[in-house]
Image (cartoon, rainbow, N blue to C red; front, side, top):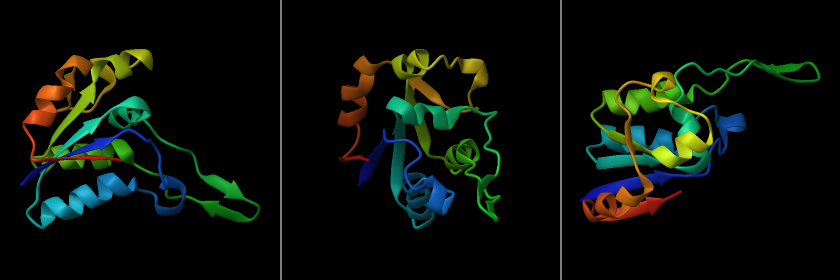
Length: 126
């Protein structure tokens, strides 16, 4: 079974967990042998920006120093052999160009999504 993970809601749970749960579970499932693909769309295309970072977050005397490293996490998926796609129109709307993105990301047009869906047994939308 081949599953397509569509990540559209960006930065979900990243304050508490320092990871996007969908990206994290995709890493774990790939390690267990799952055949997965990822599609970033909407605000989640920002995950593919290579040079991003977040300063520490401070709540009174408590400092959260372990900021999410989403570009590294997505690049890690690609390094594991998972194809990661992003919707070109969503990237353009956010001012992102190919030079700012992680290596190995596959940009597709919104009109190409049905073909991507067709090539998978299941589509999971997060």
